[in-house]
Length: 152
Image 1 (cartoon, rainbow, N blue to C red):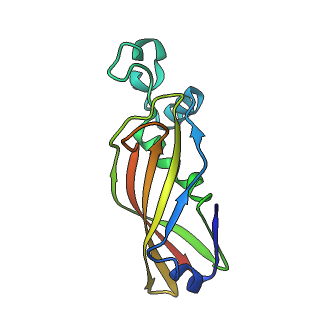
Image 2 (cartoon, rainbow, N blue to C red):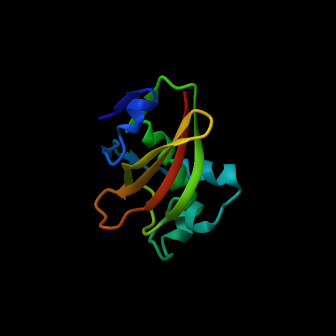
Image 3 (cartoon, helix red, strand yellow):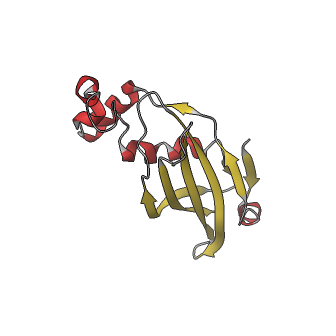
């Protein structure tokens, strides 16, 4: 379920709140190949299904940065911020990839609002903890702390 806030005051009230989970998203070979083309990272563990069968993961896997980039569309299922003039991705404090995402696996995003604090220029900085979960796996695909800024 999407949490929707209107303006910075309502966004500040989310500090410490668990936003729940996004829907599941299947990782397809086509998505992995498209990402490989966009980044010029065609390592065989990502794009050569035949060779990857005998590799360390038993098949092709998503790029770690593909998994990280999917935080953005999945996050829109968790939080919508309205009543602001601009929102931007301010950066990441840490990112880890504890488990590979095999092609054909399903992932989803879990998010928690760590803090929301005022910043100069009439905005707020929101720190989020994200976990990209893999359906049926005890380990997550990605754990990240992301920072966003929103301005009135």
